[in-house]
Image 1 (cartoon, rainbow, N blue to C red):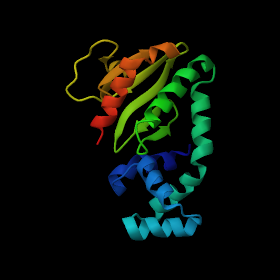
Image 2: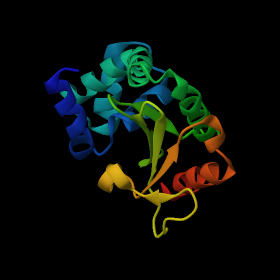
Image 3: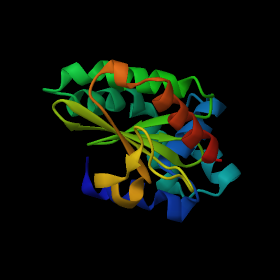
Length: 180
């Protein structure tokens, strides 16, 4: 991704009040076909500057293709982990229509109003599921955040599909509930 574009995306929450993922949801709910009409909508209804509005609309048109590309690149050489990824994403999609799955270069953010989970192929044989949970001590499969640092409060290591059990799904649901 172009450095200037990445900087613009990184600055979007501060400058516009919402992340790119949140803007993409807002725009998709409007179902506006024409680029110019979508830019006008963001500018007039949300006070977004022309540069940010144009970027949001442009990326909304490319989103599906680039998201798939980002995920396939993450799992290149780690294809045996994709069933775990697929199960995690299908689980969070079942929580509600307000879940946004946002692939990045090295991980996938799971967002409601704010990020509540992060899926990262950590090694060739393990996915790390990062969660944001308030006032929760590590327990069971739930560890401290480890390599996630402040991005997530906790981590769950997943090596096979069977590791995405009822306990993991319950922790995911709890992080989702807290992300309002």
